[in-house]
Every structure is written in C-alpha cells, then in structure tokens.
Image 1: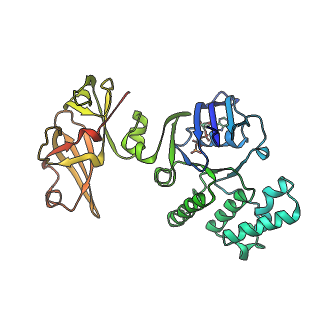
Image 2: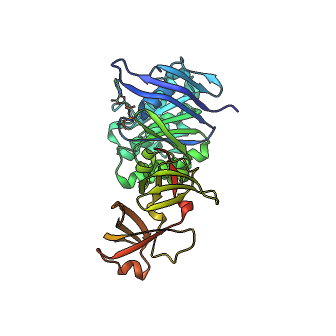
Image 3: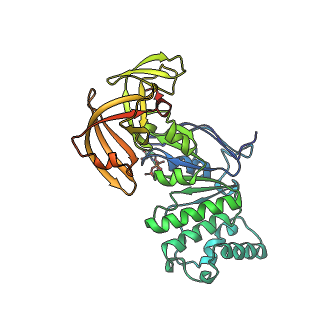
Length: 356
Ligand SMILES: Nc1ncnc2c1ncn2[C@@H]1O[C@H](COP(=O)(O)OP(=O)(O)OP(=O)(O)O)[C@@H](O)[C@H]1O
C-alpha cells in the first residue's frame, strides 16, 4: 500500500541538545484527517515542520506517495502549511497573498489568475480581493490563509493550530467549514492542536503525543474507549485510574486486577497493573447483575448541568475520588446530596486494563 504520508522512526534533536521528537512512526492514507494532540512542548509543531521540510530531521525518513522526500526543500514537497498566525503579508492585497505560493512555484500568469479567482470564489473572498490583508477580521484572515494554502493544490495540507487565534464561536463555525472542505476536496489534512475537543471532533485519527513520543494513534472513539497508556487515560476524557496487581485472566476472557477495591475485571490480558474507568461508565445503585463490579463510597459533590449530572464520589476502601457523569433526569440522582452513601456499578466491558 502506498501511503500519502509515511514517517519512519523520525526524530529531532535541536542543536542545543533538546530532544523534541523521538522515533515517530505514522502512516496516513489519502484523504485522512489526522490530528496531532498533546500538551505544549510535546513536539507537535516540530513534527509538522519536519513534514513540511522547514526543519531538518535528525534521524529517520519522510515518505510522500511512496517517494522519499526527507531531503527535499518545502517547495518541492506536495504539501502546503497554514500557520497559527496565518503569516499573511499585511500590506499586500488579499489577491497577492493568495497568489504567493503560485508565484514561488513560477506558475504562468494566466493560470495563476485563473486559480486565484477560483479559490477566492470558493471562499467567498472576491469582494475583498483588492483589500490589504491587515484590514480584515480574524475569520476573514483565516479564510485567506486557507485559500493560500489550497491554491497550490497540495496533496497534503499541514495546519499548525490554525484556529488558535479565533474566539470560541468563530472557531466552531470554521471547524465545521474545515471539515466539510476536507471531505469535499479529499485532501489529506494533518492538523496540530492542543485542544482536545477540536482533535476529537474533527479528525479520523488522533496521534496523542507527550514528551516527543507518540503515546497512541487511534480513532477518537477508541481513544475514549480504549486508552493504551496512563498518559492517554489521564489526558483524554475523564477517567478514574486505579492501580493494582495483575491477576491473570477470567474464564470469560476478562483480565483481572487486584486493587484496594477488590479484584476488578476489565478488557485486557490480565498482566496489566492499572484499571481505567471512564466517568460515564459508572452507574448508581445498580440492581447487581452477576458481572457487575460494585464499589461503595460517599458523595462529595454534585453538579447538574442540563441533563448531565457531574458527581464526585470518595470510595470507601481506597479513598480515591472518582468522577462520574450520569443522566440527571432520574429522581434518585436528583435526590442525592453530598454526604450520602452511594453504590456504584461498572460493567467490566467498559473498563480497560493497561500497563504502567
Ligand atoms: N529551535 C529550537 N531549539 C531548541 N529547542 C526547541 C526549538 N524549537 C522547539 N524546541 C523545543 O522542542 C520541544 C518541542 O517543541 P514544539 O514547538 O514542537 O512543541 P509543541 O507540542 O508544538 O508545543 P506548542 O503546543 O506549545 O506549540 C520543546 O521542548 C521546545 O522547547
């Protein structure tokens, strides 16, 4: 299979000795929307710049459509990059800003004008074509940056926190536009963000990074349902992490782990030492199916936001605080007050066992 983008053991050590990225492996298919997600300084932008060719790589190789592009300059790669601050030329017109990439490539004038007109039309920017870039709103500048990135018809569009400068409302609107645009054009998008909701809401797959290392590459759903590492379990969603000792597998195929709350069952082999329980997996006062895991504790806080109840329960034996998200439409949930004893049930299929 020929991938649009392939990173093989890519690493970057800056001249001052900072190891920004280590052994980054990734394969991206044509038309995929992939997000790099992780805390500040984890190496997302460095990786994106290495893909674009703005940063030399220290080891490994970058392949695009089966071709080794590791040593090609940015303008020779089938990529286009959009920066957080848009990097527009403020005193140049919208038209000239959009045409910039075509000028760099030496596109003949007639072809250039045709392509620019088409993309300005697509982004509804014709009426601003002669206006200077610094005389436009944030959202309009964002569209120009996108138009400028797409006018060169890249195979892969690289976006470095492209919505970071927008307010929450505009951000949501442009997120939707971006998703529709990507589907329509069928172009591969690599999108860097530190906003979890953005990564999970927009992309087909998410690469979670921490300290220059890839922690997990999964669909948004699997990142929630089946985190692979303690970092991901802590970073994504709202999980309770319970440490224990491995106890092998049950006859029903669950992994077993001995914790301060007794032996818990979960999805795993049984050689793992941590149980991850998502906040929405807990149930209150279960009727007690045979497979259900029961934990008892005391309600420490309760917040009802719309139809969702956010509860905190301190567990009796181990003393851990667990976060719970539960439908607030039930009378028994509404009746709970801090200090009340509660029994929590968890279906073992929603528990993931991981190595620590
Ligand atoms: N030119 C440089 N020289 C030395 N170290 C650098 C350089 N550029 C980045 N770094 C370091 O490399 C690491 C990764 O930085 P990078 O900008 O890739 O992270 P990031 O995940 O994109 O962060 P952010 O979300 O804050 O942009 C950080 O520790 C950073 O300080």
